[in-house]
Length: 317
Picture 1 (cartoon, rainbow, N blue to C red):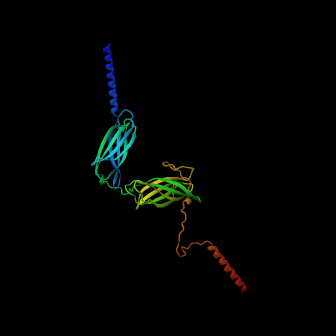
Picture 2: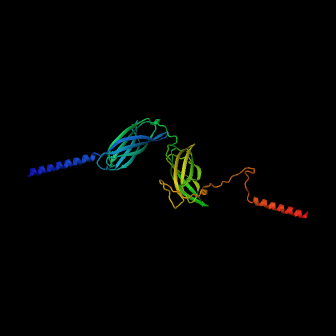
Picture 3: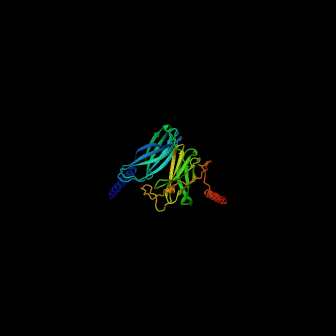
C-alpha cells in the first residue's frame, strides 16, 4: 500500500515538473523578434545629427503578441558613455505581421557611436541588436535648417469696423537649435479659403531666440468679415523660405473648413478684398496735386461773382 502511494506521489511530482518546465519554456520563447534595423540622417546641423532609427519588429507566433516596447540607446564608441536614449511603445503586433517602429535620437557630428535597440514584451527583455556608425562628420549640414519651429498660433479679434475685422495673431516660436537664432524676417498673411484671395499680409521679425526656449511674436491683420481664412506664417532667410506654419480663422459660422475634403465655393464679393487706400504725400506739380475739400465749390462761387460784377458793369455802361 505504501509502495503504491509512493509511486502515485512520484508520478504526480513528475507530471507537475514536466508541466512546469513546458510552461517556462513557452514563456521564455517569445514570438517577437527584430528582423532588421535601418539608420538614416533625419536632420544635419553644424554640430549635431538627428538619426532616424527604424526597427522592424516581427511576430512569428500563432497569435497576437503582448505589448511591445523598444528602447533606443546611443553610446560614444571611444568612451563607451551613454549620450542619448529614447523609449517608444509599439503596442500589440498581430501574428505573421512585421511592424516598423521609427525612433529619433540626436548625436554629435564628431566621432563614432554604437546604436543599441532593445526589444521588450510586457516589460520583459527579449532581444538586443547593436550597430556601429562612423563618419557622420562627413554629412553635409542642411544650410536651410535655422532651428526655429512655429509651434502654434492663437487668434484674437481686436476690432470690427465697416465689415472689416482686425485680428491679433500670436505666433509661438521655439528654437530647437544649439545656439541663439538669427533675427529673421517673417511674413504673416491671410488667404480666403474658397477663392484663395489674399486678404492681408504683414512683415515682422522673429527676433533672436535663445536655444531651447519659446517666445511669442505678435502682429495684426485686417480681413473682411464673414469669410473663412487660412493664416500662414513664413520665415525667410535671405531669399529662401526656411520654415512655415498655418492656422485657421473662421468668421463664417454657417460652415466649417474641411481640411482634407473638397470645398464648395460660396459667392465671393471680390470688392471686399480690395486693399484699403493708403495716404500718400505727393510732390509739387499738377500731376500729383492733392484735392482740397471745398476747392471746386469755391471756384464756382468766384466764377459766379465775376459774372455778376461783369453784368452790373455792363448795365452801368
